Image (cartoon, rainbow, N blue to C red; front, side, top):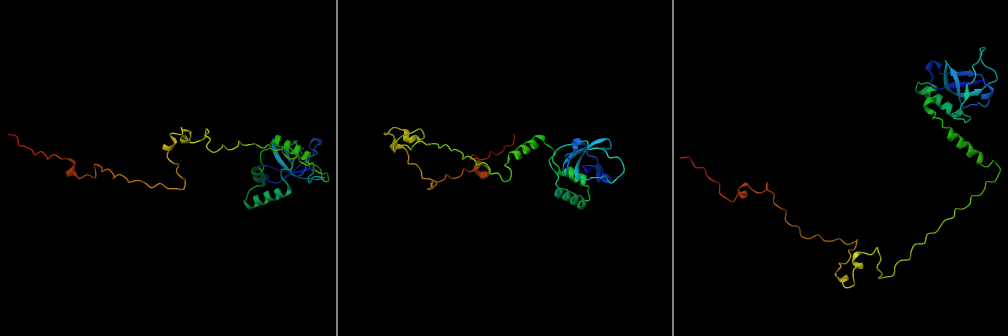
Length: 207
């Protein structure tokens, strides 16, 4: 028989349950995921351990299915989940529900295949072949005075016009700013008496 901790059950059902091991689930061990029938529903559980005899005289329900042979909850992780549930006044089933990631069968198969390819203890590992690096040859620099596509526009000009090209400014020199033009006086800054040059028109009485 196997002692199973159910995942995500009600608080008053947060305790281990015993299930009978069938020939199809004979490989079930501590820390593995299984599926069991609980209250007429297919429920996920974690195997806590295997025992020779049950602690009750009632007939045990069998393990429905072994989800994976990978140990997803080691004993140390189970103790941590129990301590978290006790400290936070929660249930172990809820802590397991939040701690367990979704199952990916493809990732589990890839991990098993990688583990089988690893050399066994005592056997020398196959030396890795060094990676062959290809050296890229850069073109030689152009000769002095040669005009290329990347040359500045002045250097591509005819020789008679190159004297008119300004000398390139050094990145370390700082150009001195020229004199600034006085700011323009806005209409709001001009006094009201200067806005109109014509004298004000005096009113005439009708007559």
